[in-house]
Length: 262
Image (tube, one colour):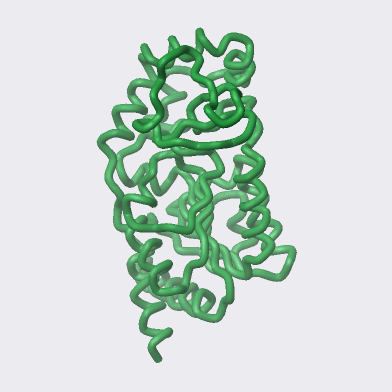
């Protein structure tokens, strides 16, 4: 059997699982963003490979001196500036659009994304929980209120929350920073309802996100991996689509559409 035939067979199996499920959730990782030209952190061409891996004290430094953190944020360079430039230029790829189409078809109930790039929204997806935040938003670390970055006037450093007076920072989750409680609770709730999870471009090594597929599997749900490479979760997946999301997710959408209409 050729690789193309194996992929087609896997797409057929995956489509049948999706159509048969009641609550499908996609867990999306950095692999899908890489397809849009956003560099990864690890591996060949990774930002940390080039600039060195940051320590786990980012959030602690913010809490110790938020004014200094904001001043440094405004004058970024190196890895952070390269990431900002890549994010600004990135556009949704075929995988993003395929997930949005699955949602419009009523076959995908939610996306849990580990990415901060806002590309799911640009592609048209609506039901999204961003477990690591969104680069285009600011957040109060006390009450979790959020605002679009371009709609929040920064008249002082550090900015303060107009609702509760708490410190305001970028919505993206920093090293050492707890996942915002509201986002984590929604992820836990979605995993609890999920009976079929799509694992799209995730390395399955970053927690707590990597734990959600395990929860789904333990509760009797099915896992569909969409990834060109193996991950720690591959042995537990019911179907593996060994290709990039932009390649195989459109095929999955088309087959789901055919099965749903039959």
